[in-house]
Length: 180
Image 1: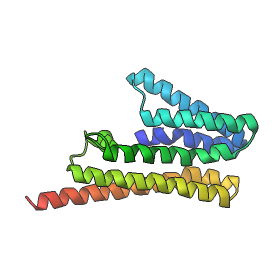
Image 2: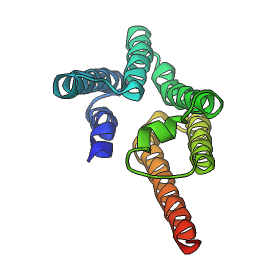
Image 3: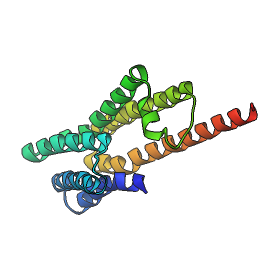
């Protein structure tokens, strides 16, 4: 359920784009993400740092897009967000007691330190790849193809990564249980 809520602004962007244009869709995603932060604060008195970072970047790049009527800024935003996340995950890979992925999933998954580090590296690679693919689509396809990729391609790649990660975790649990 949480992943659906997380991707709701992208769905709103997609629908509004299909009905209007990229500038109205950009304004819609800025409003949707701002409302996500507001609701998160009202219901939990906390704001997810990844959501806050994304909202700040979408507001900044989306604001520039709307102000100067140049879509390239909002098109670069997914790359910048993904690369910022890759840097954050990389930073915690070397600094601190826990990787970022362990902080996010540690309550629900029990893994050895080395496995947390491997999983953290998987997400670093995923974020780097998403940023690169986004730029490829931006510069090699039309705006509508990019909008479709932003929803279906990025969501699909993230979903595939989550499945791969789940299968990988399950295999590690199986290995650990077989060695007992």
